[in-house]
Length: 150
Image (tube, rainbow, N blue to C red; front, side, top):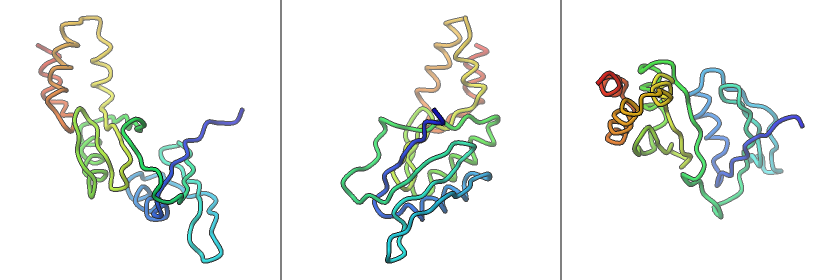
């Protein structure tokens, strides 16, 4: 087996979505694009942060839900802030590090340090961190660290 590739169903804005994601993720690449006779995009391959995707302009029958989301593991608060600002531009914030971008696709913008905190064997520390996380939209390492440290 070669790979498992997420396939994303867009209404009719796949080309706009690829351009947007290419502006957000610095190493984005566009692969093969299949165009209809009128020149509009039917489907396209693209890569974000090394993950290959296939997109299709399938029409309005289906839309994205929070049942599927993509996690962006960030090395710093600055990286969290940058992705959060870019992806919520035209989108909407949720809670606990979740957001929907302008196309309705759900993302989780998560600092790796936070993920490490959740793996601590001290369940009191973990619970304090989770309690703070539940009050946040964009994850903020300052209060999460303070909760972790007690």
